[in-house]
Image 1 (cartoon, rainbow, N blue to C red):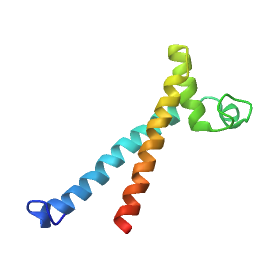
Image 2: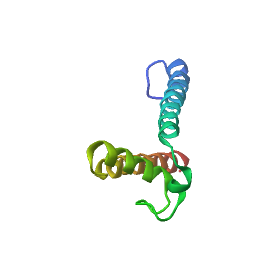
Image 3: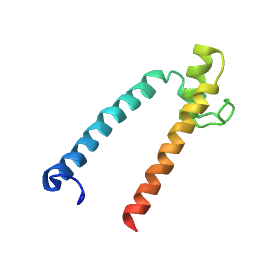
Length: 96
């Protein structure tokens, strides 16, 4: 925050805002995932299309039931994987 204008106020404000936004978006994400779960044993079964990965199966089934293909669910998981990767890279950069 050293290079920002009025860093002593805007730095903490940015941190608090990012936490608040993450809280709201994360809560919405978890609520959406929770609402779509109807058959827990099937989601955890290795016999399903995602091989037992519950969140992957939820995305896959949501797109398959809505659009006839689960490719959109796989793309959503790819977006999440890229976000996790960049989050890890940011953590490594800030700690180095």
